[in-house]
Image (cartoon, rainbow, N blue to C red; front, side, top):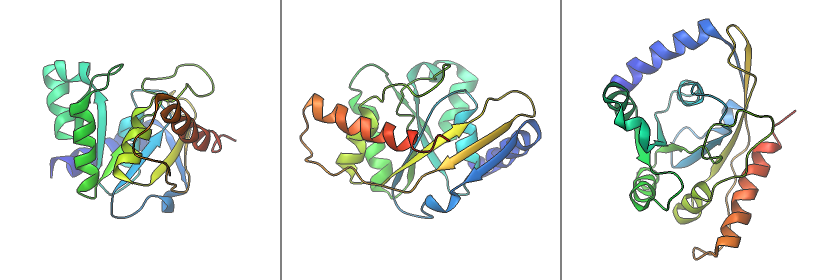
Length: 190
């Protein structure tokens, strides 16, 4: 209930502040497990991703955000759970796998942090690891534009794909799988 109410408010605010165009909306499954993998430019990205679909989205969010009392309460109630970046956060991986096992949609920003530059950052291994272990489809997403007041933001949603490889991976293999995710996102840049 809180999620739907908050999403309606945020959708209204975003529609006033920015001109949003969504391409490929049909590529997000209406049900079943999936991993949304967008590029990450701004603090606006998670609310935007949460608003482009009627389906509830679960988010991995950096652990530090949960340390702020009001913000931590809000994002927890908006389906976010913490991840300690730069580590193999077993609790976050278990939570992500649980969300997917329950047939829900999970959003992971594979760059691992906001990218204030042009192009894409190198992908972190978490999204690939979770996709492989859960055998869930990945939905690449590219957010194009800046979040200046009344600017145009285009959200391009690519076709779902799977990472196919053994569950036991070397670091090099995991890096290669992460590169596949980033390449699929890069294909949406035009």
